[in-house]
Every structure is written in C-alpha cells, then in structure tokens.
Amino acid sequence: CRSLRYFSPLSKHLDMAVASSFVPADFIVPTTFQGPGFYLEPLAAKHNERDHEAWSSSMQHIHKTPGMEGRDWPHDMTLGENLKDMEMHWREFQERTAFTYSILENDYVIGCVYIYPDKETDADAHVRSWVRKSRAEMDRVVWQSISEWLLTEWPFAKLRYAERA
Image 1 (cartoon, rainbow, N blue to C red):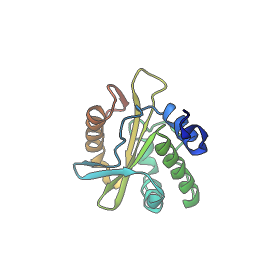
Image 2 (image 1 turned 90 degrees about the vertical axis):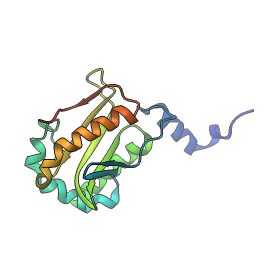
Image 3 (image 1 turned 120 degrees about the vertical axis):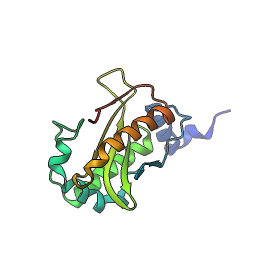
C-alpha cells in the first residue's frame, strides 16, 4: 500500500527539505530562547523595520564584530530589500537548512544570530551573531549564552562561533 505523501506536491517538498536538513528530522527546532537580558525568536517579516533600523545604525560596528569581519553584509539596503532577505532566512528556517533568530530586548531588536551548516571545518554548525552598537556590551553575553544553548539543547557537539573577548 502506498502512502498518500507520494502523491502530494507539498509532502514531496517537505520530504526534500527534511532530507537536506542539517539537524535530525526528529529534532524539534526551538522557536524561542530566553537569555540573560535578551530573548530569541525566529527572524520574520514582523521584525523588518526594527531589524533594518538595528543593523543600518550599526554597520561599522557589525563589520568589526568577531565572525562578521570581511563579509559584504551589512551594506545599504531599502526596507523592501531587507524584507526579501528576511523572507529568505524564513524559508531556510522552515526548510531546516539554516536558522536565523532575531535577538530582542523586550520588543527592541538588538541583533541577530545565524546558525548554518559549517562547510569549512569539522564543526557541526557555523554560528555568527551581531548586536547593535548601542548594546555592544551584550555581545559577549549573547555569544556565551547562545554557545551554551546550542551545545546543550541542539544536536551539535562542535561549533564554529568566533569567540568574544
């Protein structure tokens, strides 16, 4: 007897997404994390204006953040371009190929964290994060908390995540 999933275009898409996921199919991806003085939620369109304001006010600071140096982002973008970027991150999250979270303090966006498969070393995940210049003191707190969370609550034994001083 054949399963109906073989006949559904949506299930076929989901099967392919799970097959290309870098976390196990049975792993329940967290949709929030509470850290000391901040919390995470998946980056989504509802964050667009607050996210855009956070990074666009801190571009030089972000370029100097460990793990973000030498990258072509951030660069000038319109709100519409930022929204398209967020939609890409949302699709990756839904497909389980990468996970991007907004870092919030109350309802204020203070940064972002990106969790991707590591294609350059033997680490299980390549993680990058930034915080806005006005909340620079949170960078080490975020790095330390997220590192511990990923190593204890996620199926990762080794991370590539630039250390903070």
